[in-house]
Length: 280
Ligand code: URA
Ligand code: SF4
Image (cartoon, rainbow, N blue to C red):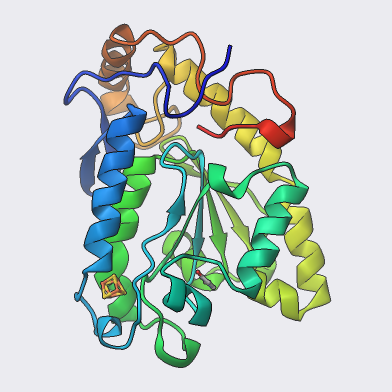
């Protein structure tokens, strides 16, 4: 059955589902049109943001780019020269390498979502500073809650440290970690680092090869959630600290959501070769 993300049969009754992220709670948005509209509004807010000093030196803010229905979210460091000019993430040399690396494992760039820890270019491509990362954090949080990805791929150490502070990228790259609430983390080298160093480039390529298997599992998990048989990402899962307390409630919430849905297939569940794989 042809199913596209935009034509997804997923429907949600207002206010039934929630996504928790740290101490914050956000609404779970399943409907593709509603999700795209919310993401657009967020992108517009970022383009006009003046919350930190990077606003003064940027040409264009770079909110992010890709599918609002992605199961994979890539998080880089911050826009570089080309990104600042175009207002789009990973469009320079690093971006070309990232896009090609995705294609090599059968994933279209348009089916994932790509963003950065800071949305405005640090002058001379210096590292983003802690106050800038802090100021920008709420945008990344909202993107995660909205897109609600099952898989977060960090590119480089700045995005890695949001989830694994103090971890060494050379040690943990390629190690898939459960980060709770139905999400996994796949830390990878930054594409710019991979381009500079052959060992890291080979590691980058090998780590990327883990993605299709994770995507397949993520799509299964979302299909189960749509049937009301498992939680959505962002909700307490077995093994999470908050599962015992809220697990049953979480399950009911999901069932109530699913009850309102006519879901015979989700985007991505159609039988297709990896090249046509659509990521929810
Ligand atoms: N490097 C990044 O970290 N992000 C981009 O968007 C481009 C280059
Ligand atoms: Fe706003 Fe983030 Fe840009 Fe700072 S980096 S101005 S917080 S969008």
